[in-house]
Image 1 (cartoon, rainbow, N blue to C red):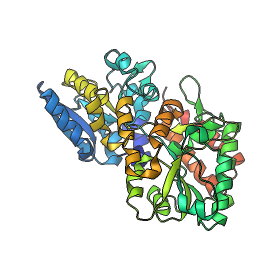
Image 2 (image 1 turned 180 degrees about the horizontal axis):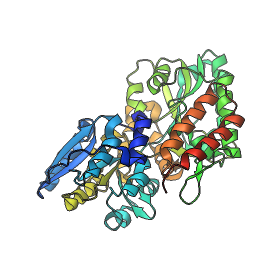
Image 3 (image 1 turned 135 degrees about the horizontal axis):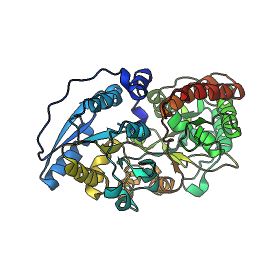
Amino acid sequence: MTMTSYRLGRRGFLTGMLGVSSLPLLGSLPARAQDKTVRVFGNGDGAGYKRLFDAFEKVSGKKVSFEGVPFSDLQNTIVQRFRTGNSGIDVFLVDPTYIPTFDKLGILTDLTSAFAEKSKGVLFPSDLQGATYNGRMLSMPIGESTQFLFYNKKLLAQAGVEAPGVSPDARITWEELIDLARKVQKGGAEIGFGFEQVDRYYQLQVLPESLGGGPGVKGEDLLTPDVANDGWLQAGKWYGSIFADGVASRGPTSTTEMADLFKAGRLAFFVSGPWQIAGFNKVEGLDYAVAPHPYFAGGKAVTPSESWHFGVAAGAANPDLAMEFLNYAGLDKDGSLFASDEDFLSANIETSADMLKTLPQQNPNLKGIDLLISYELANTAIRRPRTLGYLQLEELVTRAWSDIRNGSDAAQTFPQLQRELERSFKRIER
């Protein structure tokens, strides 16, 4: 499962993570003697990590047991399990945005001495940074993500619009993109442009960031809201304008529906990630290619990134074995390849490069995509902020983008959002 598909029941999650005392205690799990089994906890049935588990068992001679819960229950269940004092977990799946909260609750083992230096030059710097909080490495990055601009070659040719290049040097601005999208619409395309993850923080964080507006929070603890600065206001005005003038459609808004519009040849330009490629390649007659993710004129190029990590549970029954498992999943070339089955990209630099080499082989239109993705991960990738207020930030910012998409004025919406976040963050215990 990628970050794009992972959505939480936010109100229940906020109760669980930020008001832990309100959670009922689960019955304590029976203690288990030290054995040669690493106990992994995550979501679903663990099928996406089967190759990893099987390979680790083969090379280590140890066993892996997996326990999973539905996506929506993952974070609450993790908290509840650790409240018993005996979680029954050695390794668990970590969404890196929750590292500050997990650290505050004391449920992550410090990995700094084991992996911080060892990971340099092996993992992408942005991933290693994303695993580090208050100077300590607290998780092992496994997957990675990026985004770029898909376009329908047939629609562009039909409108007489020259296709953008795939090289990072050929990166176009948002302003140029919308001009091209309007021309393609006039040439017959139903919709000029669309985001896959309409209104979502993960995909839209780059808009104010490109304009120097930052991630929406600032300060040493990232608990000071900052969503009413010029960068945010300018980004919001632009976002609202593309829906107001019809170059982007106000509906549909689900990720599946947006991808289906592109597959059907109804959408000319589409910002999404490499997880779409396999599906697009299966669509008969879909002639598409990719270009670098756009940026604002006068601003900087930034791209969304990051995905799942593994963490070692505090009080793990088999801490040495858990560390061995993380080393294999994150830093070993074979292990990191199997670990990234769920994410389409690896946080391991060498493994990711090997995976990327296969993409141009899948479709001749994708020549150069491997070099583009490698460049973005090394130079333009940004991560979501590591703040105890991330859940409120994501929820309220997403709602604000939605309001702007539907016609609200960014000049009023973002100052109101600023006030809402200030009130919400006051309730967070530092």
